[in-house]
Amino acid sequence: MKQFISFFTVGTVFGIIMTKSEAVSWFRIHEMFRFESFHMYGIIGTAVVLGAIIIALMKRFKVKTLRNTFVDYMPMQLHIPRHLLAGSIFGLGWALMGACPGPMFVLLGQGFGIMALVILSGTLGTYTYGVVKDKLPH
Image (cartoon, rainbow, N blue to C red):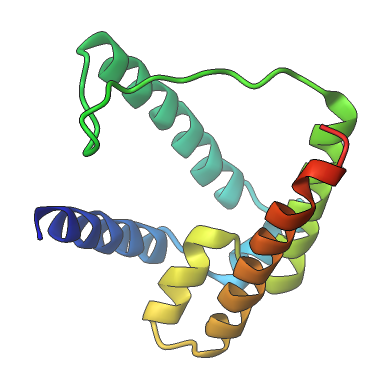
């Protein structure tokens, strides 16, 4: 029950921040892909910098996760073709749907029922990747 309350609280705060910052706005995402505004780049840059600072602080103060393990980060080995392909597929999905995974759930919570189809499609894509993962060049 404690874990459920933690997830619910974090999800609610995340949804409020995404909504108030207009990060779930299709107009803002469209603006970003047309390089017409700095708004979304500022949100993404702020999230990256804050995430790096928070992870560094969690490692320094030896914070434990809900699974009672220490926070750790293992950097992935850079493989440019793999990262370009994966990033392009993610970006195309984002451009087609107008939302990346976080905002999809926020938009569903705001009552945009069509996002259920997008979430279902994303989940199906994830399972498909899991099935063919061993056959792909990694």
